[in-house]
Length: 313
Image (cartoon, rainbow, N blue to C red; front, side, top):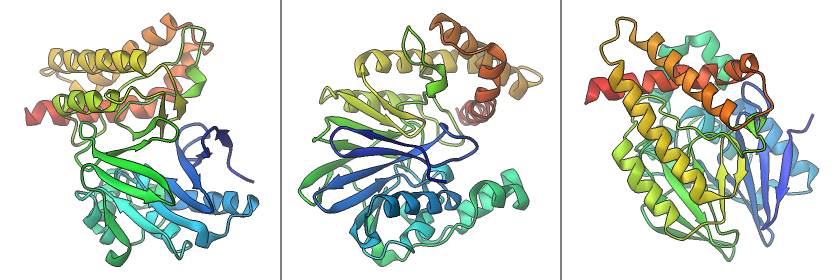
């Protein structure tokens, strides 16, 4: 079965990477002339679906010029090695801080295995394969990449992770933001707009750096934001204000609960209740029980990330 796809204007296609559930994570297939590129790629388990999309659209694997994960967290870049093995002409465009983990993913594997255990790790992410250094392009700050006449600008975009970049696509006047413009699942869309919230996944949450990244993202007055979690959003200025407010609320919650005896549980509960109240305000057509279910993993990870931030600062 083919993954769900959404064809936007400007030769941008959203492809569901089918992690955990449909509608949780996606990548983007860009076209310029006869050339193609992936922004993000999901896990190794996502790769057969991405290849099936190419085949269904009559795109030869040799036509894919680049694979561009915004950062090296496994839900964005875990499948890079396997995908590149199927795309003989493609180069990997990766943040300089993340390149070594793509060339030698042993620490990524070790860290994820420590968190999830070997069996769950394999079930969630599949096999994580290395990438030859000769196929790597370092996306230094302000790198301009000529993608078959379609210029892509890469900027350093810390806040969620130090190994994170964002990609400005002048053709669509949009940013591909990975996780640094937050998360927004389409199940929460309602008459008052989308529900957008920060992702403070361990271990490099940096609210000051994140604020500076947001300023850079807003500078060209973008029309669109392409989220990995999930899909394209407009009304960018309003959503940026929502994200700023969310970042402030998250910090306030973390500081208020810093000394709680069951800190992680208290943080997760507080973040969940904040989210549910915001979903209700937006009049999203979703039951609180289902909203809680969809948010459970993110709230757990966000609580973990805030704990790391508290202990570091």
